[in-house]
Each structure stands twice: as C-alpha cells, then as structure tokens.
Length: 387
Image (cartoon, rainbow, N blue to C red; front, side, top):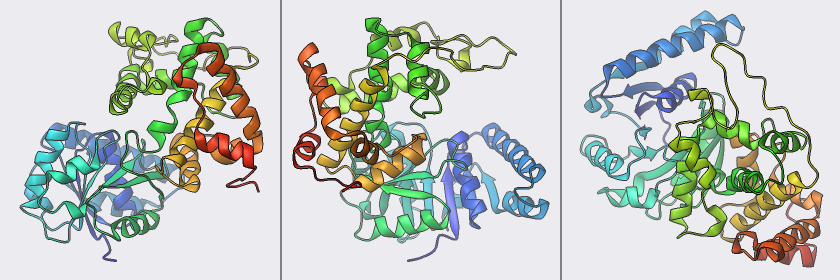
C-alpha cells in the first residue's frame, strides 16, 4: 500500500477545511484548493482559531499547531494538485460539477493518484463512469465536523479496483478514523438507516400523538444526545429535507423514505432552525439555547426505535454493509447510544416485530413492513451479537 504523503482537497468550505485539517494532523502535506480566494482566507482564519483553542486546552503544543498549519498550502489553481497521492473533493452536491472536476484532475495527476468524493448522496458509480480511469474512484464520506467525528463511510464504485477499499480503510485508520464500508446505494449507511429517527417523529407529531418537545424528551430518555426535532433544527430543515427527498427519489418513491409536508412547509417559510432563529423551536438572538423541554410519552421511543432497528436489519438484508459496520456507523457517525443491531437483539426481536406488525395492521402501509431478515431471526433465534 502506497502511503498518502501528499493530499489534495478541493473545496475549502467547512467540510473541505475539516478534511484538510485531519490530513495535516496525520502528518500529510496538504493542498487545499478553492476557486474563491475569500473562502480560502476564511478557512485559514478558522483553522488558526481552532488550533489556538487546542493549544489553550493543552491538546497540542504550540510547535505542533504551527507544524499542522504549515502543512496546508492554499491555492486557487487546481493544477497545483498534480503531485498528490489522493485528491478528495468536497464541493457542491452536483454530479455534473463533480464529474467535470474529476475529468480535469485526470488530465494532470499520476496514474496512481486516487480520486475520492465526499458526497453524501450521489452515486459513486455514476461519478466513476465519467472518468477515463474509473478504477481509482471511491467514496470517502466524512461527517461534520470532520476533525471530531470518527466515522468515514468508504464506498467503492462498481468499477473500483480490487484492493482499493482495504487500502483506503487502512489509510483512514492511520488518520485516526473509523472506516465503515458501504455499498454504493442511496444514503450509504447513515443517511439511509437514520431516516426513521426524523420521519417517524414527524409522523407522530403530525398525528398529534405527542408534541415535538415530548418526542425529543422520550428519545433523550433512551440515551440519545438530542431528540429528532432539536437535531433537525440544528442540521437545518433545508438540508434535512433535501437529504430525505434525495433518498426517497433514489428508492423510486418507497414510502419508508417519504418526506414530510410539515418539514417542507418549514423550508417554504424559511424557518430552517437555529441558523434562522426559528424551526420547530425558537432561538432568540444572543440567548443560549438550552434544548427542548418536554415529558416522556409512553410508546413514542418504542415506535421510533423499532423503525430504526428494522431499517438497520434491512440494510444487512440488502447487503448494504455488515452488521458490525452498520452499528459502528450509527455510533460513530450520528452518536447513537448503542449500535442498532446489537441493541435490537438485546431489546428483543419479537418485541420489534410486534411493534411493526401492529403499526402495519393499523395503517395498512408498506412503510411499516418488517424486514425479512428481522422476522426470520426473530423466529430462528439466530443473533449477530448476542447468541
């Protein structure tokens, strides 16, 4: 395996800058490219502040922080990346724009240079097909903020070279990350498996079964750091709704991933959450947000958890990822208190099937269909983690 000594990152927004910091902290020489000089300047100033805080906290010495800063060279000229061992793009989520970038890069990098995309929603295979050498294209989906979040979803295209996944996973581990290998399917692991956390919460609120604050309280009582509504407010409803819509369309309208009209209305009103001062909750200017305050409602958490666990089992059934990597991804990527599959097995698979069958009988919707693998394992008693 060739070590990644020189790393290129295209796109100096929050994600690209974070990836550049991760690579620099791992000892790599980094070229950070963005066509906008102002974006590069903001990235540089933000890194100075981050490193200064780390020094103040004693997490690193002043010499270490200076060395990290010096390893990152910023440029508006993509040709400067010609000597890189790997280039990771973190630009706009547009397949045609990303494809054009990779085609440009192919004309200037070495044959051994890996081209990686940080996309969270686009097909890696489609991106690879735009390249003359598709065997070196792979997905490397970091989570925000990249320096703090351990998970990286490693997603091979159909055309990726044999052995590339293992090499990339080894590099990510060397960078201090936790790689989880995912099939090139909509949402990969996290954005697929996590959908019910939001959609089922929205569904219950729309039905009037519980308020957003009470649903949040019910999920925090299960060990989640944030409830679904405060988390959607933090992510931004424009972003969360767009991801749900993308996954829904990619699965040909599967009702399990149907977007919420309520969330669409929030987007239409520009009530996007914290960044606009209002979403499901209000965020007064210059006042600290202390979280939503609600009461635990019986049955709320069971319904959301059953849907999440079912989605995790279905991801195994469709060979999206291994049970181990699914549980790793949900814990390291979105800070779930436990891995969903191990949690389900401890919770009781019969209990989950009972909840889902009850919902399916009540609503008559395919949304609540039980995964064949979950139903089978509930009947046989076979377990992945808790034999």
